[in-house]
Image (cartoon, rainbow, N blue to C red):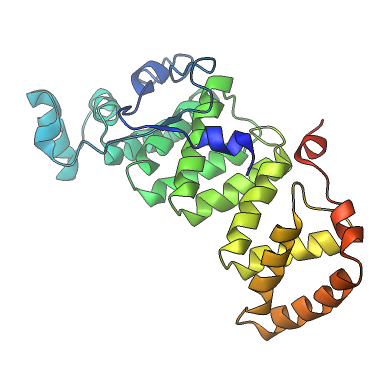
Length: 269
């Protein structure tokens, strides 16, 4: 695993939705993004304490009443929805993001992604899909600070076992959109999955290796682990593929290891 992944996984546990209020004022208008200092806090993950677990957690009677109306299915104002979201209410964050999307304004799409991320970080998995779809789009204007925050959110979700987030993050790292090319990171994530028993991930890596493309940063130990996962797969086809590929690999392992690019080479533009 690269240093980049190590820094991206750094967690400051006392930070709660840091910068949401500064990042998206009541729509419209919007400000520049989460107040993240990329110099003093490289790769910091903004995390949550899920503190809005009951209405009385909110600091004012007005917010408490707004949340009760929301939970009862009653309509609440745009401003109240955003205020609840900024105070750590994940359901409000999700609904506020939906309201931003309904406005059909390109300049609000980045803010919508921010609030979907906030909702996802309070264990609302249904917010992950909309977040990923926005990150896939080429027409959304994200600031670098916001992109950094959203990358950290996806990494946090992936590390916590969220499969869609992990799959999307690997695809983003491989393609270079929207976080830039980090193919070594993508390979490291996929290798971790393969070593943990994911036969599909192991098969993809073995096929990539044996095709001569190489796998960024792969070691002989990694390669052995991929074969081991395939050889114990419950799929007979995968086991047969592992057997055939193993024969080729064992005949000349240096040939395949020699084609494996370094992380530095792989991430050069």
